[in-house]
Image (cartoon, rainbow, N blue to C red):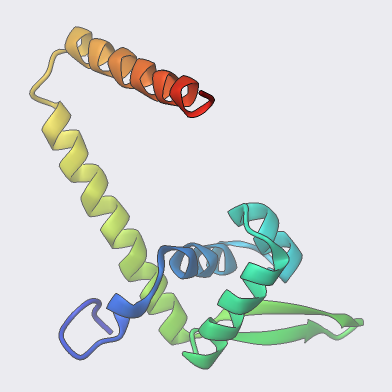
Amino acid sequence: MQFPSEGDHAHAYTLSELHVLHQIATQDRARVTSLAMACGLTRGAISKIVHQLLERNDIIPYQQSDNHKNIYYRCTDQGEAVEAWHQSVHRDAYARVTQFFARYTPAQRATIAQFLSDVVEHGKLLKGL
């Protein structure tokens, strides 16, 4: 399965859905609570996203044989394909950023990093006014 292309629904995924899917793919025994903590979202937001991923057949619920109280989630083959596409997008973006900054010397990159850090800090100060 290739993403995205015309006719695919990959464009319909939100960043939050992709990040939750990533957590499900990488966590052992992913639950709503652990997903919320890992993603920095509320349990309610995670529940909504999980519901959407279930409807798309990207994940399936399961329970441990010794504990029928907790519901866990794992990726289906389709979910794994979406996660693989998502990771390839991250790799491509990282490669482009690395290539872009390769034109600068280490000293120039340090100056750029300091400037961007100062801009972020200044923005935080302005936000408090």
